[in-house]
Image 1 (cartoon, helix red, strand yellow):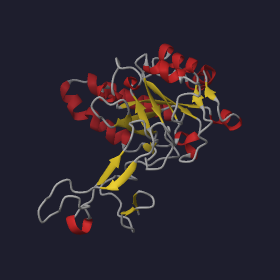
Image 2 (image 1 turned 45 degrees about the vertical axis):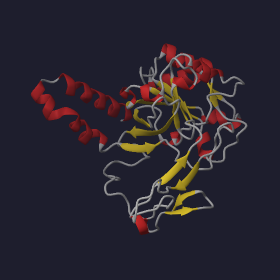
Image 3 (image 1 turned 90 degrees about the horizontal axis):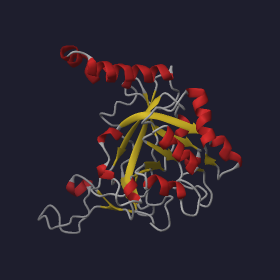
Image 4 (image 1 turned 120 degrees about the horizontal axis):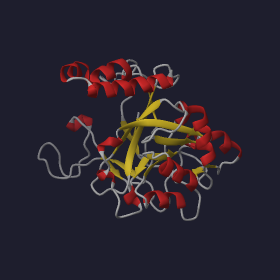
Amino acid sequence: MRKVFLILVLALLVVSFVLPGAARSKMGLWDIYENFFVNAKYVDLTHAFTPVQPVWPGFGNAKFEPTKAGADLGDYASKGDVFTYEKHGFIATTYYIPTDQYGTQLDPPAHWDAYYATIDELPATYCVRPLVVVDIHKQCIDNPGYHGSIEDIKAWEEKHGIIPEGAVVMFRSDWGKKWPNPDPGLFPGVHIDALKFLHNERHILFHGHEPLDTDTTPNLEGEYWLMHNGYCQAEGVTNLWMVPEAGALIAIGYAKPKGGAGGYARYIAICPPDWGYGVSVKEAPGAPTKKYDKPLHYDKAKGMRVR
């Protein structure tokens, strides 16, 4: 069913562009949305970032604070006043984030090489791609420092066929289940030979992993090779255990700071309607959003807003 779902979606996409003008305008992409995407199951692969979470010590953690008026606004607010629901009718939050390498992220090659693309220079075609999940979590149980290999990739292909060109390949290690308290000294990675195989032989868009580094080599050889050859990567991904190994799509969204060497990202897996995890548009339409029993408020001890 999962392969059928992906094939039908891609077939309808092709048909919608090759039909004559009148038929195309009648069908279009809205028909694909109504027939497939409304019923698909959506799984969030993203950690919500907080003031205290895993991050490279060289960068440090973020700070969240209630936003204050930056100028004197007369009777409405004085400079330095905290905006509140009671006095101003709204709130806002100020984020001091010491790095763009924070939480679930998309690394553009400019992170390591000044001659390749920054986050804002990536094309809009990054939006939706086939999702491949290479499962290495069993190997990581006995060896927490296990690195995904070419053999793991070929084992996936023996079950599911050749990895589609332009796909996003995620390595499931279940390291993300330990967030925000993983072992900082030992983590699973992806071997450089596997990365070269995926890009040179399968021509994927990018790969992703759950830890915050590509591998445990002293010079981060995998990340070095990727960035110096113009490739991106996803880091800090989670919930890959809730996604099928084949047959799903991935929606890719990220912040777009001009000249950015990293991007705070949100990845959403779009799974077939019969998949056991996630929610459909019908189950969670998103408008209006849920109204909670407890109000949002700033917790000084936690350094962020909570309910």
